[in-house]
Every structure is written in structure tokens, then in C-alpha cells.
Image 1 (tube, one colour):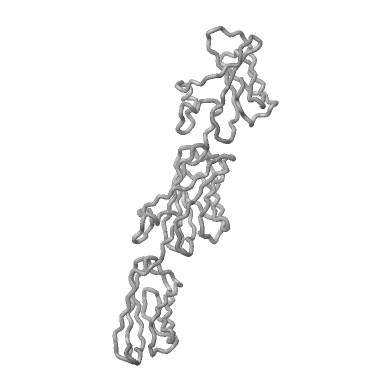
Image 2: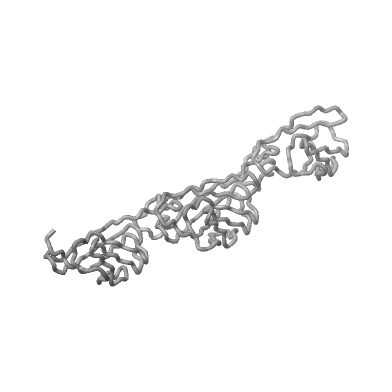
Length: 363
């Protein structure tokens, strides 16, 4: 029997052979260069009867179509004859029972499928710059991935982590090691299997990273596995649903896509003075609201307060939402600096009040 192209069995090997009634020898000679096996007939066969024998080979790593297999017999002058595969055979389907979504044509000899992920979804919980973000993955493969297989999530651009290891949280199967390896320079996370990832099984997991410091569009995340040289990497498919975001006011569908970072903007920016008389104290009431959180340590600058007679230095500022009681005023440019001492959520309005001395002349 020739045409069984295979590179994983050595040329000197003999292969174990099984037959129903021991009509064939228990071993056969394997010849690597033409992918053939020679099997001795050990008892006479009867014309018209069907005989079977079986042997095992190791498949090649990469995708390929079925081989054309031929058979001949010597010394009785049987010519080379192309063998056939009956894809309608119920026995063939039973033989493939352990293969995920098996099709009858998979019984054809040496047909190798492309191993890959067949489900590869991704989404995030938080679209705010500089905040901790949970990234969720849902993975399904068309082949079993074994213990020790490494799965790499790439192109997590501009995300950061203070640690080189990142905790992996699973829902269900518990087949991943508890932590993965974060490579900041390459923007990759490498995870390792601690159990078998069965073909066709849903695997949901998540990990946390710090979001990029500046706004950006969603990135195209790539997922790969070191399963032989021909495993097909995939671009993760974003689950763009605002409902997946965690406590994000006015979230949009695109903001659930990985590492999409919202552009900050004021949604309310109002200021009013209490007195319009020259050289008089005027209570300034500032009302603000942003579409992103204002974190502790944020510096808010209010400019355009020119010609005030208030001198440079610290002035009293009433702003309980920011946790502050003072700010720094610069008379020349007319600028007030306020340093937030606590976080305010997105779309949360707040009020700050401070007193300035009005200009000496009417504007």
C-alpha cells in the first residue's frame, strides 16, 4: 500500500498491523520515501470475500488534502490500483466520533485539517484612560490543545502592567495556569494550559491591564497557540455591546472593543460671578461635568480670569467633590490651578466656589 505521505515514522520502523481473523502478519515494513507499507498474507484468502487490516501513522503537522493511495499484490501480478474511500459508510463516521464536528470526508487517508480557533471573541469593561481594565476572552478550538500549550494574546498596544505576571481568571473549565507572562515591550500576554482545551468546548477567561494613558481607537488583538508549526492565528472578534461595559455612564457599543479609550470632554463648563462692581469681591461659582472620571491628582486649570486685583498665591476654594479647600491663583495670566484630591466619576457634575477681587475698570 503506497502514497501514505508521512514524515513522523522512521524508515527502519516496522508497523504493527491488526486484521480481523489474522489473515495478515502482525507487522509490516514501513518505507518512508514513498509512504508505503508492505504486509505479508499469512493465510489463503477467498475470491469475493472482503478482508481488512489496519495500522497507525502519525499525521503531518500542517493542513493538506487527502492522499491518493494505491495498492498492489505480488507475486500474483496485481497491478497498482487506486484505492477508494466510501464517505457514506456509517462505520467511517463512527471511526471519527472523537473529532469535533466530524464530516464523513474526514475519513479520507492523510487528510489534515487546519488547526485553529473557531471562536475567538474579546471585549473590555472600561474605556477610560489610565484606569484598570478587565479584558474578557472566549475561545473555542477545532482540535484538542494539550497541557503545556502556550496561547499568546498579541497587539495589546499601549496597555501596561506593573508586574510581569498577570492573574488569569476563568469561568468554568479551569484549564489555564493561574497567571500569564506579560511582555511590556511586545504588548503580549502569554498563557499556558494546565489541562486539555478540548475541541468544541467553550473557554471563558479574563485578565486585568492598565489602560493606555491617552485616547485611542480599538486595537486588533491577535491570538495564537504554539500547537505545531501550522496552527492558524486569528484576529480576535470584538463583542461591541455597550451592555458589556461595567458601570460606564453613556457607554457606546464601540467602547466595549479592546483598548478603545474614550476621548475626554467637558459636558458642562459654566462659571458665574456674584458681583459686577469694580474692585469688589465676587464669588465665582464653577459648575463642571466630564464624560470621563476625574482621578485623584488631576490638575484642573481655569484660565481667562485676567485683570483681577487678587494677588498671586493660595486662595480659598470650596470644592468638596474634589476634596480640596484651596487653589493657586496667578494674577498676571489670570489662571487658577486646582489639584483634585479624590476621584469623581464620569458624568458626575460638581461645583467649586472661590472669591476674586473684580478688576478696577469696567471691561
